[in-house]
Image (cartoon, rainbow, N blue to C red):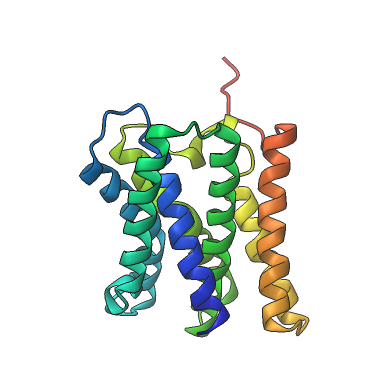
Amino acid sequence: MTSRYILEQFGVGVAAVTGVMAARGKHVDLFGVIVLALVTAFGGGTIRDLVLGDHPVFWAKDPHYVYTAAGAAVVTFFLARTHEIHLRSLQVADAFALALFTIVGLVKACAFHAPAPIAIMLGVTTGVAGGILRDLLLNEIPLVFRPDIYLYATAAFFGAVLYVVLQSARVAHLTNMVISVLAILLARLAGIQWKLALPVFKPKD
C-alpha cells in the first residue's frame, strides 16, 4: 500500500466521524447519519476525480473506502449516544481530515500532471467540499464560509502552496507530505486557539 492510500483511508475515517458529529442535535436517524458521513468523506474526492477524468471515482474502484467510512460512522453514532464528545475533539478531528484530504488530493492532481495552480485548487477542493455538501444537507452555512471558524480553507490553501514549493525544491515526497499535512493542521489549530481569521467583507453602510 502506498502512503497516499493509507493517508486517504485514515482521512476517510476521520471525515466520516466529523460527518456524524455534525448531525448531533439534528434528530437524524442512523441511516441519515451514514449518508452524511459518506457525503463528508467522499464529496471532495469525488469532485476531484470527476475534474481529473479519473473514472470510476476512487471509492467506486475500491469498496474498502466505503467500509471504512460506514464503519467509522456506525461506531461513532453509538459512542456519541453514551459518551460526551467535546467540541474541541471534533475540531481537532476535522482539522486532521482537512489536512489529510487537501494533501492527498493535491498529490493525486500532481500525479495526473495538473498544472500547479489547478493542483492547488483541487487539493483545497478535496479538503473542503465534503464539509460544504454536508452542511448544505443540514441546512447550515458551510464551515468554510463562516468567519468564526478561523483559517479553514485558508489553512488548506497555505499547506497546498507549501507542498508545491517544497516539491519544486525537490524535497523527498513522503517528507513533503508530512510537512505539508502538519502545516495545515497547525495553521488550523492555531486559528482555533487564537481566533485568527481573514478580514470579513462588510459594506461601509
